[in-house]
Every structure is written in structure tokens, then in C-alpha cells.
Length: 235
Image 1 (tube, rainbow, N blue to C red):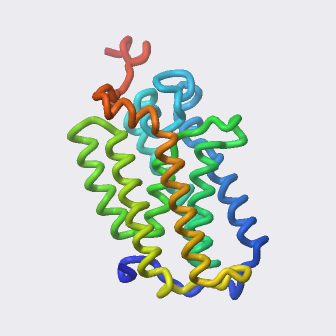
Image 2 (tube, helix red, strand yellow; image 1 turned 120 degrees about the vertical axis):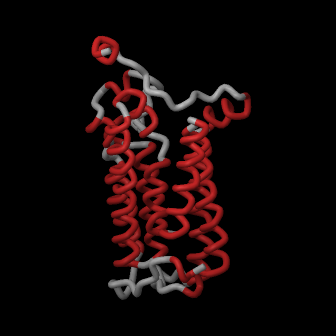
């Protein structure tokens, strides 16, 4: 399993508690950046589901804008996670990934009203498990294309990746290059990483609780763009 990940010797020689706090805070603030609001505008929070995420960006702004939103939301998690991995090691990467997603879902800059965190989670896992992440993304993108149910693709892909990473942490973590973090050895880090990943999974399931309920009852909305007055006049 460790043959398909980025395993580098951290640049830093140690990581104290204040370093982890800095990683968490910076990552959270980066997560606050709302690319759907920047790219699509106020329509994304005033129309459709009113959720500033990629799916509603598609419904209110169209495919091109939604693609841009998805890529940027993924990138804002990819970059902090990659830098944390290179500078401080894998444990710091988990901290960065979690807090970017948390900041995306509960942004203090927007009164805690953010997206559901799926694109950012996928961006984080492109760093954590690059090969497996790309395979999972392709498979579930195909499922979304065939079913037109974005929630199946996003929930399926992120849940699969988190469960895989939990298995990875339990089996392989001790073989990786990482730092002794404020007296927290590899066993300690493995336990904390498991808690962080489990919290991430619980957070994503919570934000998608209405989608899960609709999926179970067969009432989930399919992925279609909602026509605006401008669209109708252009026809």
C-alpha cells in the first residue's frame, strides 16, 4: 500500500504543538475561501439548494463554472495538505486536510454557512492517496454520469477513500517518514490520525444527512441545471 503514496522525509526536524496549531489555523482560513461565491456569484446562495458547493454551482451557473468551482475547492485542500506533508510529515497532512474541509463547511467569514466539503476532501486525498484517489474519482464520476445523482458519486468516493485510509493508517503508518510530534510517537499519531479520519467521515455524513435520507427514499434530486430567466430568453 505504501508504494503508491508520497512518502518524503519532512523538511522540519521537529513539530511542536504550536506548529500543529498553525497548520490547523492556516488550513481552516484557506478553507473559508468560497470559490462558488467568487465564480458564480450570489446566485449560488440564493437559488437552487442555496448551498455554495459544486453541485449547486452547476445548477445555478452551468457546467463550466461548476467545473472551475470544483477544481478550486479541491486545490485549496490539495495545496495545504501537500505543503504540510512535505514540511512536517504525514500527521500534519491529516491536520491540514481536516481543517480545510472544516473551514469549507463552517467558514467564519460567511457566518458558518459553507458547502458540504466533498471537493475539498477529494483534493486532500489526491495528496494522501494519489493513485487510489484518481481511480476512485474516475469510477464514481462515471456513476454520476450514468445516474445523474451527484450525491452517490461524492458520498461513495469520499467514504471509500476515508475507509481505505483508515486501513492504511492501521497497517502501514509505522513504515512512513514522519516526525515525533510534541512527544506523540508513531503509535500515538496512528491513534490520533484514526480519530481525525473518523471525525472527517462523520462530518461529511452529517452534512449530507438530507441527501442520504432522500437516496434511501428514492427522492434524491438528479443533477440538472436549473434554467434562469436569462437562459429562457436566450432560447
